[in-house]
Length: 378
Ligand SMILES: [Zn+2]
Image 1 (tube, rainbow, N blue to C red):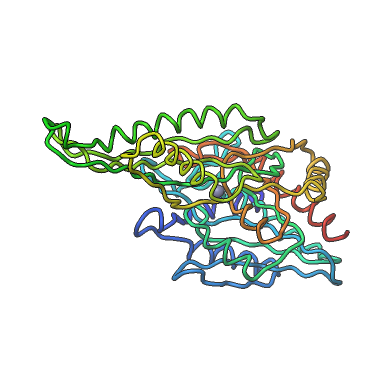
Image 2 (image 1 turned 180 degrees about the horizontal axis):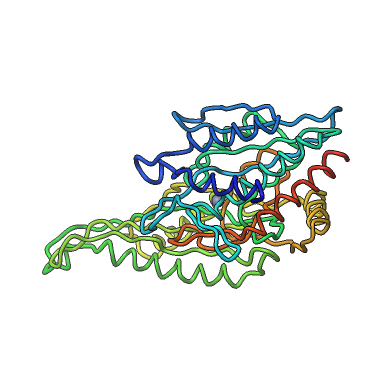
């Protein structure tokens, strides 16, 4: 068996469900030890840094004979939960696919980058430096990537999230905003006393829906389409015969590169201001709960075309694409490390049946080897 695929099966067999998503879950401790052992055996220098108790990042370094550019490969070790899966940690290879939780997101990418690093260590690096970073907690708060960029620097990075072997140079960001409208509680028979907070939220919802239509009519980003927003959850009211005094709405605004941080909150504030101007009894406000920025590689960066050349040399023809989902690439990029996403294809991210295409994992590894040679030799 190809050693990279054997390693992939080993990684899938190790439970690394994120304990911040699933209370009591195993976390990344065991898989980090396995990855560290793999890197040491390959001859890399290994640094294990605990990010939170029992949850370490593993950073392995291969130095060239002379100084030169630094290339980083980065992947997350955690997975989402496994509810509804029959045998999430029993990897099965069938019809060119390897099944199991995390196979695609993203142990396939991890195995590919570790395999590539092993091969580079075996052949020796003439110049520069290769850093392989396996990080914790991408599926929740990205504590691992934040800790990584606080210590480590690179001239370019590849995050091996699943991209179907395309080169992703941009992805959307998101912002969560909570809106509260207030009314006056009263018996349902007393309309003069009651003010209905849920009805007031209805006005907000109507404006938000119109705003979303406007967002989606704007000129699309060439790789990411348009920004958008949706109502995620609404909570309000107690019983049939009472006016509700409070209603809470959670919305998610998906953002594009170049949009300012806090744009969703600003848009909601503008809607609330307009509603107050029309009706001075209207009461409501908004607060930003969480946000993650969109990212796009600078047009002048050589990394995307170097990666495409490397892939061509290895026998595949990636497109230059954008991804809809957020990733750690935004954190690396914000820290000044030009970053692209490139990883194997498969299906079933975050769902009951997840697999990665085995041939894609090998192709990803071979591409990363070719990139490491070219990038560090510049
Ligand atoms: Zn992922």
